[in-house]
Image 1: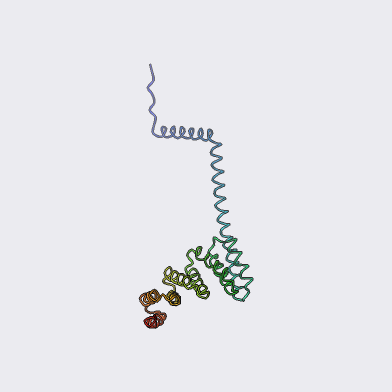
Image 2: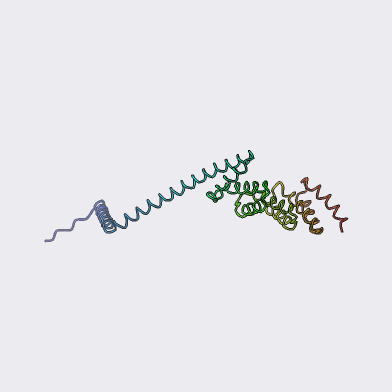
Length: 226
């Protein structure tokens, strides 16, 4: 006579499932041990690279900050050669840092002070193209370019840079004066109607600026110009 089958209690069923699951996991690990090892090593390598890159960027930022400090100190002491040396180090080795814009401005200032205007123009143009969020420095580069071209008698270029600087950075505290210089440039070209429009723009956009008083006087003069 056959003996009746014993009924498995719930605890026993859970235990058997756990044993089966454990056995399957062990079998999977045994079959794929090499792939899992490679994967683990790859994760470690990626983490190491990430940490290394982060450390490298941090170190580069510190070196760039120190070089920037040396450049500004040299400029404040009138050491133009030292300023240029440190500025070039930043521009060549740490171009991706926020200190590059400062270095570009200092380089332009040194060349402008020495009368090396073509080099100054090149430095300021490069600063405009790579200034990022350094709005104050970018506006300064536009204004400096306008001033250089005005001094060379290239009034068309001067007006363009003065207007572009004020248009791109209208909230700069010298934006109204940049437009005023643009009007002066246009007057030199006898483009009085364009100059009048720029002066009207000053009065409209910067009514509280001191430049507005001069713009009003300029407008009165233009009326009597041929």
